[in-house]
Image 1: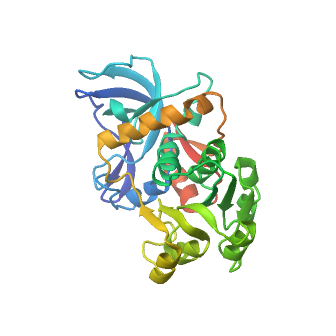
Image 2: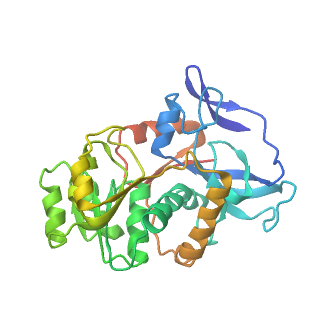
Length: 321
């Protein structure tokens, strides 16, 4: 089968043996993958948790159909349309707990491939770790990414009183209202914190889901209300930053870091169950829109990575098999 494999000289499309499902796993024929920022790091040779390194198959999410079941798997059958975590390969063998059914028969594989990472990241950050309550104000930093766009929609659908999204690109910022933003901000504008405070009558937001970090760490705290929460899900703006410890204490902010790199398969399965319980009717009814920026054939994966690297996309970049 074909797979995008990291070699000593970079990613290459190679023929490798098709996997066999182990007990508790399913084998999936992949029809589409979606790209994520972590793919760039892995393609450059960096590890993403335990994933990556020379010889590894790159990629984090896919959609396809089941072709075989490992021993002990129940509740699924060959031919079922599913989506989940795994690499840029024609076939993947994955634990059944990491798989989600594609909820709508009319949802294409290309569309479905855009959801697994965003659903898990934002459901967990907004509803579980962020503990958002109906009526609260939510700010998504980095809102024009596929994950950010879905995050705004989840917050809105689950009863947020107001949603704020950020993007430093004027064109992308102008489109955030289409995906639930009541206010769109540019964090390169020194007045962005004041704009958020003005919007919230001086109180600050209840919850920030931060995909940027870096220089935004302390300004985020200025934009958060007393006893508010910040959930750090990404470090696109830098891994390290100045942290105003006194401001953190004064505002009594709960600041939590999350990642899927250190979660166990059982933890991921529990998150999947929560997603289905909370969001599946909405997803089945196409309540959530995930724009596809562009579609590339698997053999053109380098062009897809280049587009993501250029940060020129709005929504998701997809590989089609």
